[in-house]
Structure formats: structure tokens, C-alpha cells
Length: 256
Image 1 (cartoon, helix red, strand yellow):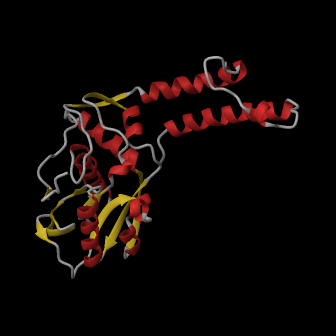
Image 2 (cartoon, rainbow, N blue to C red):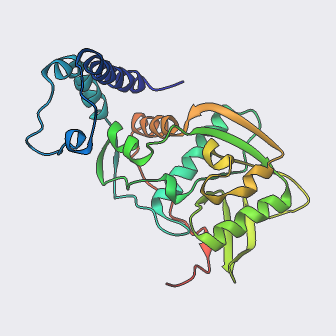
Image 3 (cartoon, one colour):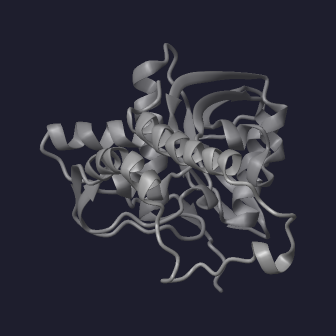
């Protein structure tokens, strides 16, 4: 289910497009050339009053919603190669929240640093911060991987350093993953594992081609951004701050 903010943004875009289309229909235009169509975007460019009047109430609703404070972070959460407070926080909540929804517990959670666009600042966290962190319309999905494909996932994480993972540990050695443990137990390549991630990554985004080998995929029915919002609101309702679990997950990280 989409967050109500989507309706506000959609209305804002529709209003803008409507005015733009009306202007194109009503105003005759001479044949275009570079001299006529080049338009400097600077302080001399003024807003169209009609468009502004139409957009104003929607802009106010969006601003109000984005400014809503939903939690407090005790320290700034940033991303980094291999493991980080931000990567740990997001993957941990993905696993926790997903396991509240699905019938059979999921083994792991994963995302990539490319999907975490900005840090979460220390102090009050509002809805807008989460939209900046996760601006994509990514859905949460659970994949079932065989043992060799699971090992391929960890080797990818060890080689690239861009893939934070929850409920697992491993050691980087010669660009591959060794001593892989999932839920505290050694990786068993004779069995299958489940992992929650985004539908974008599940389709091979960010070069995660191994996910296209999944034996099974099942959408959870919620956007990744909405899951983050839900988790933070639950923390706040329980009187808890936004804090990352920084226990060691990756050993042997190459020194730059």
C-alpha cells in the first residue's frame, strides 16, 4: 500500500502538467529554433501565477507531511564499505519487519550502498529524511536461494564491499568470502536460504546477477521506504531512539 504522500505528489505533478499542456494548446507558437527555445533558468525566470495558485495547496500538504518528526537518532548513521551503522540499521529492520509479516522466518536481509542515498542525521528524524535516504519505489521481496548461489552472494559482498547483510558474518580473503555464518551457523551449501531485499536488486540491479538464479521470489506487499518509516515509528512509540547494531559482521576488510 502506498503512503498518502504519493497522492499529494501525484496531484502536484498533474497540476503542473495540466497548466503546461494548456499553455501549449492555447498559445500559438512559431517554428522552433535554438534562439527561440533556449531559456536561461535564473532569478529572471518568474513563476506562472495560475500554476502557482493551483499547486500551492498541494505543496503545503507535501511540506507538512515531509516535516513530520517520526523519531530521534542518537548519532548520525552513515554508510561505508562492507559494514556501517546505516547499512546495519536498514538491513536489520528489513529482516525484523519482514519476519513480522511472513509465515516462515527469513534467514537474512540485504541491500546495497547505492540504494542508501544519504545519511540519517543525529537528532530529530522526519519523513523527508527517509524519502531522501530511500527515494526509490522499491518493493520488499523475499528470495529463496540454493547454497551455491548464497555463497556467490557472499563472494560478491566480499569483492565489492557494497552489500550490507543482516544476520550473517563472513571474512574477506583474497577477494572472496570465507568463514561464512548465517544465524551463527556455518554456510551449508547443500541447503537453501531465504533473504529479504528489494525488487530492484532481485532483478539483478547493482550487478547482483546471482539473485536472478533465485529458486523462488515472493513480494511482501510493502515498499522498502514504508517499511523503514514503520520501523522508526514503532521505535518511537516504544520510547526507543534510532540506534544501529554495530557488532562486527565483516572481518578481514581490505585496507585502502
